Length: 228
Image 1 (tube, helix red, strand yellow):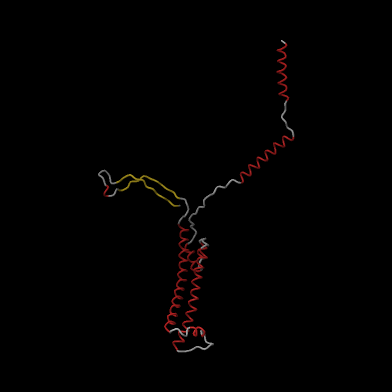
Image 2 (cartoon, rainbow, N blue to C red):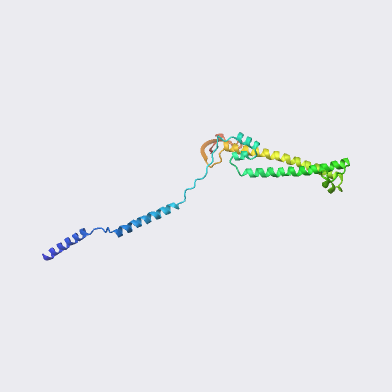
C-alpha cells in the first residue's frame, strides 16, 4: 500500500515539474536568434546578387519604315551618309579612306602632268625658259632627256589622272549601291533566328523510269521552312 502511494506521488511530481518549465526568453538568446536570422538573410541576398542573369539572344526583324530610296539618295549626295542611315558606321572610314587615296592620286598625277606638259611645250616650240619662268628648274633637270620620253611621261600622267577620277566616280557609285542593298535587306528581309519548319505528308510524282502499274504517285514528306 505504501509503495503504491509513493509511486503515485512520484508520478504527480514529474508532471508538475514538466508543466512548470517555461521557454527561455532571455535577451541574450533572443539577440543571438535575431543575429542568426539577419546573417542568413544577408548571405541569401549576396548569393542572389551574384546569380547570373539569363542571356536573351538579340533578335532582328524587318523594318518596314526603312527606305532603300532614302539610303541611296543620301549616299549619292554625301558618301557614307546612307551607311549611317543603315546604322553601319564602320563602313564610313573605309569609304573615305578609299576616296582619300583616289583623291591623292588625282592631285599627284595632275601635278606631274602639268609639269611635263609645260616642258614638252618648251621643247616643241624650241624655247628655253628663263630663271623666272614657270618650271624652269624642271626643264633644266630633264634637259638631257629625249623629246619622246617627255611626251610619253605627259601622256602617262594624264592617263593615270583620268583613271583616278573615274575611280572616284566608281567608288561613289559603289557606295550608293552598297547603301541600297543593305537598306533593301533591312526593309524586306529578316536575318534573325526565328525559323519555323513544317512537315506534312504529300504525294510525289514518280520519275518516268520508276513508274509502276499501280500508281504514278508515291507517298512522301514535304518540309517547308519559313523565315520570319
